[in-house]
Amino acid sequence: MKTIWRIAGEGVGSCNCAWGCPCQFNALPTHGRCEALVAHQVRSGHYGSVDLSGIRMAQFMSFPGAVHEGNGTRQFVFDDRTTTEQLAALREMASGKAGGPVFEIFAAVCPNELPPLRARIELEIDRERRRAAIRIPGIAESIIEPIKNPVTGEEHRARIHLPFGFEYKEAEMGNSVHWKVTAGVTMEYANTYAQLNEFDWTNLQSTESSTT
Image (cartoon, rainbow, N blue to C red; front, side, top):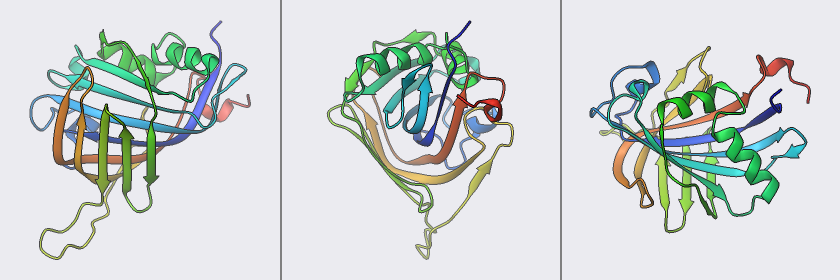
């Protein structure tokens, strides 16, 4: 019997697609391949009896084509403030072996796994204002701002609503002003898609049935 887990909090990501990101709808990436930097701040959570509240994690992913076509490469970064118990729990969850759609799906499409890193993850996320920053010194960074009208400079607001989404139900769209990864999966882009979203993941059939 698998250990019951659940984590909820704020997520933010930058990818190399144009605003709107066709990958969100299982379409082909804007430029033929998909690359992304995502980070998560867990507000509350647990893996069995291990408290995961307050932890941070990030991952880099690179696909030679569309995400659903697989053969992706990924690398996790776990915050250096996580305890030994928390790290063991996160690694088990990330592998997909502990269940839960989001980890199972990405593990299935990313057979090429690079050794995880431990580093200080600095996150600033303001979903309402569509602003965020990811900083992992010497490894990765991303600056996210609202999408702006190129003539007036007025800030646009657009959302993606996926009632049956496994990654999120609703995400605010933003502009990744500049982002890069200089670790095992190297990439660098400017003025591409960004998303800011709340997440609530579990390996139970329904998050609403979880009371532990």
